[in-house]
Structure formats: structure tokens, C-alpha cells
Image: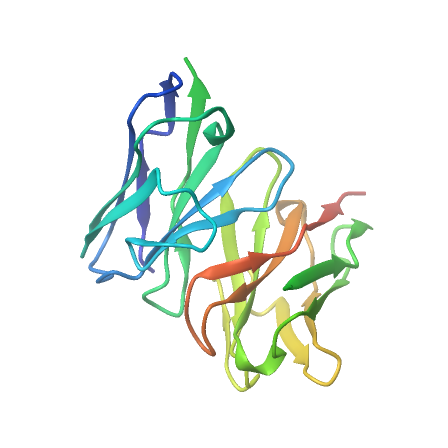
Length: 107
Length: 120
């Protein structure tokens, strides 16, 4: 199975900060990577798919980049609504895997 | 509007069985793959099973293969997860999700989740 490693596991930031989360795959997944946001007690929400495509309705301050094994999710200017958990996910293989998650908390 | 509504969760004893359902609406059900994802208390997301839109192919994580069975009732637009030989490690919120393609794609819509607790 393809392993997905996210870093950092926790990130402390302030409103307006630029935030970057990294996801590394154990083998090449081309661009078959998605990012999700999850708030406590809620279902995850798709933010980015195919590494860099913004899901409809997602604010443009979110962006994704990367290919192969290295990917990043960037929030250009952190807003109060962005404090949440973020997960990457590969869908290159039939056995799908998520990263361990990154908690973005208030500094 | 896409809607996914899970049901069937609850308290079950170790070794027992449970069947989860996910009622789908707002899209052509058999045109899209569907999937189940679970989240143990305080933990991350774990993909456990998927089925292509046609229903002909099913996929499982190693942690549930041989114990869980995914299926669909296309006439009723419903996704199921039959869970057998349950243990405490299966305690989690179970989410159903729609995929973006017939046999692939990210999980673009999610249900609200249903809690399964395995305990004596």
C-alpha cells in the first residue's frame, strides 16, 4: 500500500499568516492527490483534487501544488474559519490512503 | 443537491454484526463510485472500502477484508456496509462518500457519519 506522510502534525499560526502543509507519498502517485478540511464533529470537506484543482466553492486562499511524491497545501492568509484538521489522500491506487492529518490551531 | 444520509450505527458486542446504510440523492447513483471511511475517536481518517458505480468491483482495506462487505442497491440509491466479527478496534464514526468518477476520483461529497461502538 502507498503510505502518506503529512507534516507537521500540529501547526500554530495567527490570523493572516501564510500556512503550508506538506504531504509525502511512499511512491509516485502522479497528481492523484486530494486535500480535505475537517472541523470537530463534522464530516470532511474536499478542498483540492488532482493536486492543484480547487473544488467548487472553496476560497481562493487555498491552493495545492506538487506531483510525484511531494505535495503541499497552502493557505495564503489564514482566516478564523480555517482553524481545523487537514488531511491529504492519494487516489492513485485502488487501495486509498490518507495522511495522518495536520491540526491548524490558533497561536 | 447531493445528499448522503448514513444510518444503522449503534452499540454492538464484540464478535457481533451490524449493517450500515447510506441513502443517496441528488445525482445518478450508478454513475459514481462510492466509498466508506471511518474515524476512530480522536484519530485520523481511514479508508475502508469502495465500490464502483456499476457495482461490479469492490475494494477493501486490509484491516476489514474478509469481515466487511460493501454493496449497493442501485434501484434504491443505497450503499451498504455489512460488518461482521466486530472488535473494539472497529469503534468509529463511519462516513459514506461519493467519488468523483465511476471507478475513481476524490471524495467530493460526504454524509454526516454514523457512530459504531463495539463494547460488551
